[in-house]
Image 1 (cartoon, rainbow, N blue to C red):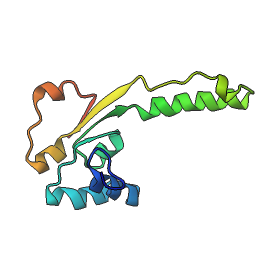
Image 2 (cartoon, rainbow, N blue to C red):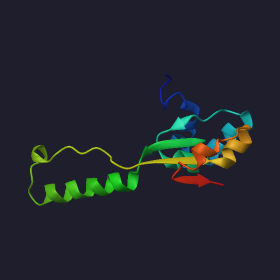
Image 3 (cartoon, rainbow, N blue to C red):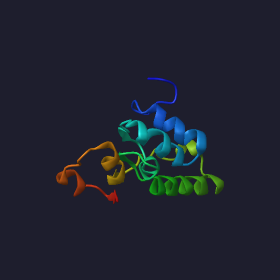
Length: 117
């Protein structure tokens, strides 16, 4: 994998990382029919990626805030239990699928937490 790749989708990731927003990814990637494979968080899909499946960042960072609070109140970080994300979400961007000429199966669409039209 090249530097900056996420599951082989480095060009898409670099577009988002460089600009901090998705407009460049949509303008740069879709006209060239790059397939944006499975991405790790919904922000990429909202910005023009095809499909993302990953942890719910809002829940994850909310739990991190609880840890920070405990540490600031005197708890030792080493004594706190390690937690892993428990909520994952599947987001599908039908606009990107259409631009890539893909048909997403209905069985996948009904399982998605969000479908972007």
